[in-house]
Length: 216
Image 1 (cartoon, rainbow, N blue to C red):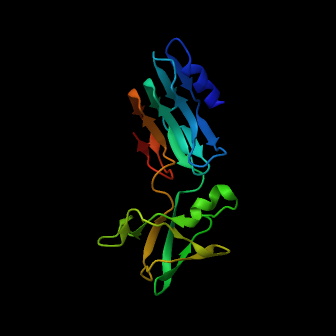
Image 2: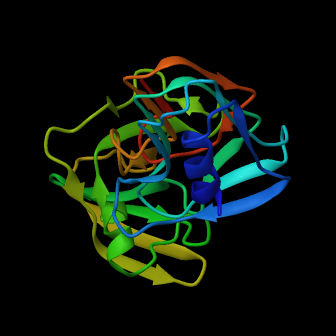
Image 3: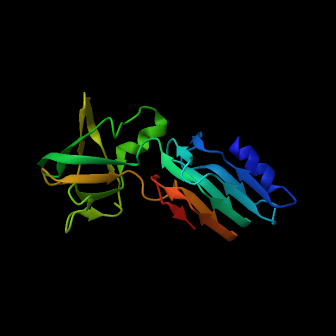
């Protein structure tokens, strides 16, 4: 239990380390956008270290959550972790038709599944869009780039047929172009440091997360 070890360190009277062995640690919780692991106002001011093995210790976030939140803490080091999600927090698709302001996109359901249940309803909304160039593997030059929509869009008419799926979106995309639809922009960050002193993030790789990689 990682959180139990963090709680023990939080109230230790000497420097303390939570050592995570090589492996994958699935993380999920009951409340969306809440932290799965946290240090909240620890009394330990001698030093807390959360450490894994470089390239071998993965925190796997299963839903719309913050992986680790550090609040009102002193002398905290987070190191040698990888943070990723069970389902990528965006959907890559090709616009196959457009009529007025409505577009139909084709996607791969094996790469970008839409699980059922309340924990995954956020995948049906779109908060940001940009056009993607599959050749350069970069955002398209002079292509559509909306960093954050004032009013999120909702995916509709989701249909999965074997290896392909389609959905509709109320936005005029260009037929034949490829897009990345980002489902969340803020909140549900990988690592959040707030009101803290002397914190370090070392040798940590964040592959994907719904919100921001590091929020301070």
